[in-house]
Length: 362
Image (cartoon, rainbow, N blue to C red):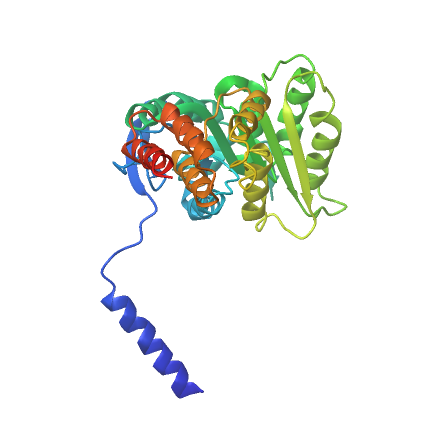
């Protein structure tokens, strides 16, 4: 057995040494922030066909990911899973991951009064307003200038990052279209953001923005003054659903099998699938009824208050499927719809031309 292990190890190392191409999911950049007075790194993931000259120059939603240095690969993997094949569960997005330099400073809304053995904790906390200026003005302007963005912006954060997500929704409601808070630290500073949310919840028109909260299993101790899980639970049950007329799309889920550290992947997975519920097309029905594409995307756009159009490659594949099941006339309608959305696409023109030629030669 030991000999076999060494043989396998040598084989694996040899195959890695012989590899010719690297697998790359993004690029690292840095910019100077006047709001923060420091250089800030950021990482960017682009959809696989972003620079593919065969396809039209699509524009994309942007996901801004806090704790980007630890969460980047997980989110890229979820996006890849949700946007492959013909059963898409979300639109293809640009991911902008923001690594930390001073996490407690940037992600907390107030200066902490917590002490341990007489010593102040989080002495540099309470700088989220400066971080917001960096994120929503400086970094977003850079991203919007450099890439084809469509104006739909999402924010994802975990723990202190989740606290920042809810803080941003409460204090800067219009900054993002969708907010995902994973086990947020709403206990912070005697529940300051919880209380601010209570005060504005039934007075604010959230204009179809989305808030998803993921709560890990309750690990509170009886003497825990922070009451982390209890505060999240009360926020979700008493605040989130307390004003049904405030035009907020809100959802939350309790993950009894996940702790504060493991909730990240399932939380992001469920949040994105929930926000974009209804985006998955009934592929096998469309060759009979191409109008279902616009019907589904119309309902999604209405619910989220933003106009979404389907990915070009997705519709191209569905059109080719329609051809394969002998629904060429409807395939032409599907390809025409795709070309209308992506008029500069060589691929969309080619697919439409081939379908028309096939129909003429029947």
